[in-house]
Length: 470
Image (cartoon, rainbow, N blue to C red):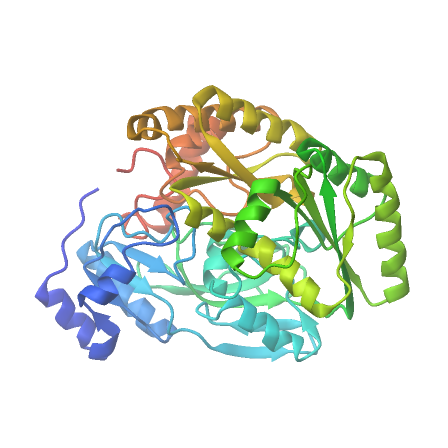
């Protein structure tokens, strides 16, 4: 695909309806938008545009479509698959100024928001009204809700509450030709035509630009209890996940952390009071929530009894808010901590939950075969394991040539047990080459056809999802 370069004439048009401080070509802004949290990849846009309202997005898209200028939407830049990288240059459509919560509807348990609102700030705002938005990615303190919708984000509480797609009722979006549409309705049920809302959710900014989001909310749970369970065997920790679920318990979070993941997080945090004995190889972080504290204590006691069938260390019950905060902080910074320790690649594998022990074993086996070390953690209750592959002493040649073979082998196993290659991070730029493992030509052809209907000129977030686009 050929895209035109940004010229002075194009910049003059953008400045005809956007103030100068929202049409940015200085090195600092271009550099900031050239990367996200995906490895060390760098692609510099030619201009950064910062709209504040939908009509501005519409004008930008209509003009770029007419002149074949590529556009890469960008949220907070916390993505891990390169979804916000402007791989063909062009326009970076920076949504950070569209950061207003439009309304909180306490009668209908809904919130309507612009896409540039930080997820945790949205959660805090609705909680003040006694309502609950449970989807909480690890980066919730910095990521934008629009990016969450574009990637169909999950997080620790997906095991009980689901992921973003389970809460999006309606979207206002701008199509690549500048048309503005709503994709659904603000109702809990909708059996009217094709489900355009769910098509846009998880489409990674390749079909339309999200400008407004209506989310379903829940009543805010009044209580939660948190338990950290140490295991002498990482495999046993994985097995215990399914045992907990089969016993009839539905934790609000059920998180797995390999020994090295927790140690990295503790070192990175700089102030943890937790200790990890030498014989402990993994931990499960288990949270239950609700409004009946006595019932929650009974759940914790039941889960504790279940652990008697495994070789565990001393279970830690978080007795104070401070202890809860510390444990959750260690889990949430695990990815950032591992990234800080080495050059790395993170794979977002997900399998049916009962296959989690075999998945962990396969990761280690492939690592031994290809000579890499891995650090694993993730949302065990969903079968979602984040596999961090560390470069350590691997040669550049092995890293560049052999590691893709190892990843392909891992993904082939995941697909063989009816899993898939991304649970919540998306495909973006870095996983495109593996799409043939999970989809055949017919399936990929259907997806490309959908892309073509929305975006005939291919200007919107090009170079993402589909293999061989660059």
